[in-house]
Length: 340
Image 1 (tube, helix red, strand yellow):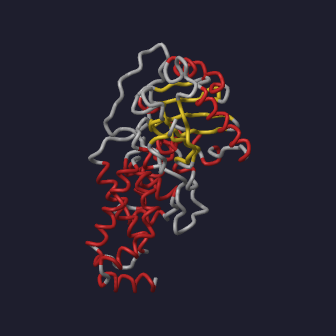
Image 2 (tube, helix red, strand yellow; image 1 turned 120 degrees about the vertical axis):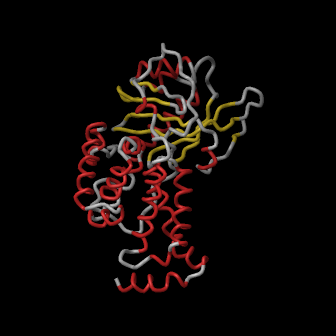
Image 3 (spheres, rainbow, N blue to C red; image 1 turned 90 degrees about the horizontal axis):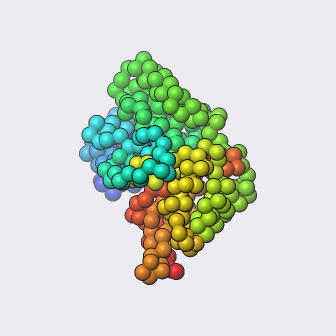
């Protein structure tokens, strides 16, 4: 507490460079926090920058009653809540409409900012470990969890993240959000109930994947081979019975081996598909991911197509989400193209 009081007394004396050095270590965890709130990496980056600017301009208001970290989280969370009042809710196709079948026409892509975006690499460690948190850092950044979070009203979303992911005390969350303690407890109860209703397998004890590193590596190698050889049957053999498949910004999605096989066979693996695709491994949302490249008919080189995020359950693939946005390749620090 003495350190906080000392900081509050001298914070206004710092120049911009000194202040920046003080808050910069919190950038990565604040970016992950804003990403959970907003579902967009680009918007999260902008929100963190706005948080630092807001903190700098109001540094004289820091009274030392909370840690600097808590003060920054308060600013970031309330900025996100303000932004969410103006922005459409982001989601995934599986949350938008019923599953499609291969016989149905593929609908036109929707390019408005309504889709979740993938998050590169693993979730960063925070300054403080929270072993009592209801959801671990990696669980709380997975696509299924992010999609379920977006079902919650913004205030409930903020409460659940602060309580069940970051493990802030309820009394501190109440101060942070300028609400009463009963209001925070009620919002958390409703948020947990909504998650349990819409996605019961998001309970912490059921989210872990039981597969060894060696088995996972073998599974992913077979997955890459299936894509790069354009082999529908090899791909389907790796899928769970109720696997889901989507490619935003296309709003349709598909469930089950037969329908996924039918769709893949008539679209991305149609005709002579061997050598049409190249995959480079990466990590996205604390899950296996790939940079996806498509061969150019004119040059034979491979150009960026998007980022795939793969969910694994047991020893099978349970979801494939391909974000068909070539610009994501650069965000994931992958090359923009590959030689033939």
